[in-house]
Length: 308
Image (tube, rainbow, N blue to C red; front, side, top):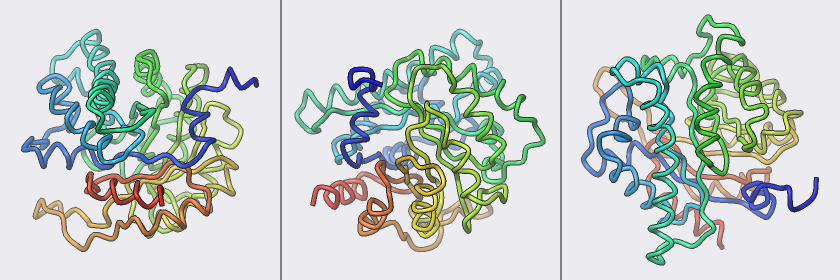
């Protein structure tokens, strides 16, 4: 492949580590938005798009080079349950990419972020649409073909919106990974594949090394790794991902706190620290950031650590 044919994001990834943003939901909640809804942050795509722009901009200004869109829980099926038809739902999916682009434009124009800045279009797992926690279990009882049919239409719309990369994220199950890898074929946009992991395994219990290896020969996938896991699990997974897939690694764990569903509150002590980034990059990480409960201050510290 000639240098001219390499997508800009892929070229940037090869040039050195890129900082991802942190948790979009916690940034929106800190601004006073109630996300106690099955659509989660995707609800604001229709109701308050300016809030989504502001949240993305906060991360760009903190030093993130890549913003992940608010489409994680945005699906045709989920929107249909709210009476939103396919055409309007497709428009909201496209808007998720447009809002992140607008945040990048504003931050660049204001001189509060340095670029180039990139947009990753988020595609969460099937379980995210169910909004019942099954994205942390996987094994939905669906075939790979059925999961591919679920994911492909949304990915087609997101890819057509012109993101720099597709973020296939928080994947709990190797079977769903197989479906996603089939669904991104031929879309013309690079993708990263990121599992939610615990104890060296996917949430569905498969060895992470086997799950990462699924992407080894998929040219559309430019990075593999983990997100929405503890920082400790992320530490263990980076080197495994690099060996198993032979590709750059993406890593963006949670704060390390845990969610108490009965009390509806976060508990525990945050373990996310910018000090971890040196070990991550040494082991092959080229996309580093945070997920739930990791805010702009933590991303700024991570960016400073990488710059140093």
